[in-house]
Amino acid sequence: MQEQENPEVSQPSDESVQATAPGTGEPSLEEQLSATEAKLAEMHDAFMRAKAEGENIRRRAQEDVNKAHKFAIESFAEAMVPVRDSLEMALKVESPSIESLKEGVEMTLKQLTSAFEKNKLVEVLPAQGDKLDPMKHQAVAVVPAEQEANTVVSVLQKGYMIADRLLRPAIVTAAQAK
Image (cartoon, rainbow, N blue to C red):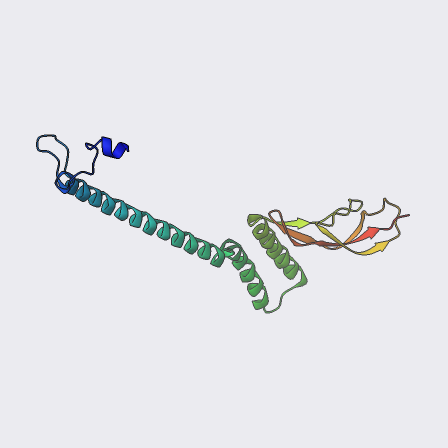
């Protein structure tokens, strides 16, 4: 019933939709549409640029990871080259004496130790009586001993760690429980 009582509330005519009254200062719908389309094109361009930049960052990061994997041992390899050179030079000596061989081996061992230290390759060498650590030691035998159970009796082979990661466990014999 209200629709019949209020005839002033009706749908606007097509003329009033397409243009505003002159002198009101409001843009016409066509002007608003073209402004909105321009803004949409600008936003689309910004989105596409951001998407391309994201892809470029992802691609560069993947290339960096690939290079890191490929050249991960470069520093260690550089430290090992002089060790190899020393060993090759030792083999070239025509008539080495035992003393010169021993001296050459000691010098080569110093180079190797230096290379290990430079690249954070650390020995795992438990002392006799140290508590057996299954994260660093591998007990291959349990022997009767005059010390506390589950402690290191002897080291058969040193272990090695790179930073905090175990490369090879120390091979040990452990004390038997009494």
